[in-house]
Image (cartoon, rainbow, N blue to C red):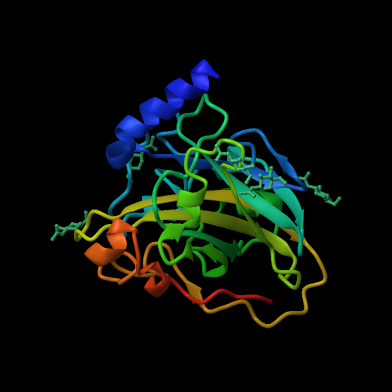
Length: 250
Ligand SMILES: *[C@@H]1O[C@H](CO)[C@@H](O)[C@H](O)[C@H]1NC(C)=O
Ligand SMILES: *[C@@H]1O[C@H](CO)[C@@H](O)[C@H](O)[C@H]1NC(C)=O
Ligand SMILES: *[C@@H]1O[C@H](CO)[C@@H](O)[C@H](O)[C@H]1NC(C)=O
Ligand SMILES: *[C@@H]1O[C@H](CO)[C@@H](O)[C@H](O)[C@H]1NC(C)=O
Ligand SMILES: *[C@@H]1O[C@H](CO)[C@@H](O)[C@H](O)[C@H]1NC(C)=O
């Protein structure tokens, strides 16, 4: 408990500057799996506080720093379409989880590997078409979902459903957190990619609309460069405009 309190205080102290994380834990079938087991490891995985990414044109924006090439060392998780999966961030590589901290939206995307073999997915750089399967923004006009669970180490995760008609296959599952600012180019981006094999009957509409990473949107998007009012988080969050495509539901 003293340890937790210490983390809590330490995190409070640095929150506005460097409360950063990777989504290194994946929750499947109700269980959080060991860090990095299914998530591609970025170059800064060992860093105590990974430096935020600001540049939407960077290749690192796709899956984290240099994580387009770390697929071969990463396992592939089997998920049944229609099931709930979750992501949990970690402040450091050594600590089991932290909270999201930043007031802002969360997103989940899927992109199908062009080569439908395990090695094909693992060796793929992720330069494909991504469709959005879930997003979570403000829960109320003055509170983000991420804010609700701020500092709560019991519920330090975001769970969402893989649409039940997702075409079966091998995919990158990309989780993203955005910390939007009212200052140009100061919005922070955090993304990680898990390797997954989705089982199921398919049968839905063609997944879309799709986007590329980098390239999905720019720093002028009103959900990236937000108003001062929204940045205070005290009201007006009902008007928040999510960046990226609409959610594909099946
Ligand atoms: C915004 O960030 C990009 C990428 O880091 C940089 O190239 C550009 O010069 C920045 N623009 C301004 C106005 O700061
Ligand atoms: C990471 O990528 C950058 C270019 O994006 C490259 O200069 C650097 O060598 C890479 N580092 C590693 C460890 O792969
Ligand atoms: C989740 O459950 C399904 C169905 O039982 C199973 O095929 C799959 O391997 C499980 N995935 C993980 C990562 O445990
Ligand atoms: C954390 O969330 C759980 C589940 O919603 C709740 O029961 C618990 O009271 C929360 N803890 C804190 C410290 O807010
Ligand atoms: C996500 O699901 C896991 C496993 O059921 C649970 O432990 C966790 O509290 C859930 N997260 C939230 C925010 O509800």
